[in-house]
Length: 156
Image (tube, rainbow, N blue to C red; front, side):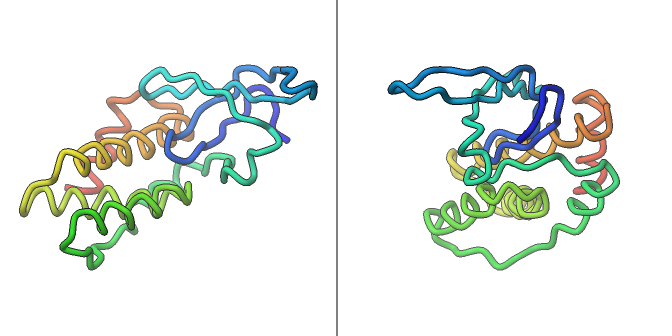
């Protein structure tokens, strides 16, 4: 179980800080929820404590670990069919692992430079970027602009 103030990652949304832990009665049962504040996009999300593990919620990595993981992103063979490519990339993002999210971001960035992206893939690339930025921001205690510089330097 996590505590108030813990920094965690919620796949598909990114890293945030648990601002509060609330109890709510649902269908006659008392449920515990984490109130997660995600700094990138100023998003507030409630996550069921009972489902946190199955949702692949995890603690954030240390800043040096994140930098190593994102710099380790490699170019991979991606399907030509955008629908299949989208599905495979979404599965990588859903893992919640920063190394997999970095692979998605890097490969979509390369594809955008070479051929352009569909609207859905542009949105996915933005989502992957936000997930990486949120974990960098919280793990290194930096602002969004500094995190973007790190990301740009890594993938330039």
